[in-house]
Length: 330
Image (cartoon, rainbow, N blue to C red):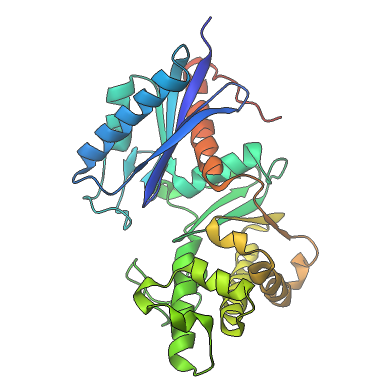
């Protein structure tokens, strides 16, 4: 009998990571392609399907592909389309599910990328055993997923949980969504760079960051400077953590989570970010929640959470057809 596998796909604004997940939840193989280097969405999907097929031939040629799960920004799990994703250069309402189904000929599930990562964290990571939690992904943007009473909150059109686009500074920084003051403009990797540039322009104190061209400065440059003892760079992370802690205290009042879990590149800053975040969170938390909500880091590699989550979402769809392949939660 052939082993059954699910293909998990995590579509990001820069790269697309994909792989095959076995019955026990093991990622048998994974790879990646560039996302936005393709002229049209049709060309991108064709390249993705070709890469997935090539990886299967190489890594698990004797396995049976039984389902595909894909996570993408602004993906609607009901329609299977990517709707108005600012990260992509293509038109809106991209029919991802239909195109993947036409190629692979198996059930396909499409979900918002942050929601897919949330399912991955719930099944395999730091949220295992939790019924109420929030995931915040701190990368180029800020993604989020919310689980309440053991269920992922999808909302109308599967668009619930856009916490990165809650306004935390009215009239503040312009956001790619067209509004001002969104959390994403302060607490993403891009937000860290914007804060650093603001500090550099408003102040005259010496900093290692002044050695970098403004157009080329990255959040890693800010992190490296902070770790080397640069006072201004450390203040950037302190400011970022405090803004995020204040926002997280407000988020708690909506769903009363047991935990808020952070993952993504920015979360790897460790105490530079997490210490001020924790302090500001506790300072602003409504008293009825004090001592009942913890902040923690993801236990999964960044790319694995979304990939495993996409596979788990696909398995849920597959169960409607044939009982699934019992992806392990152990």
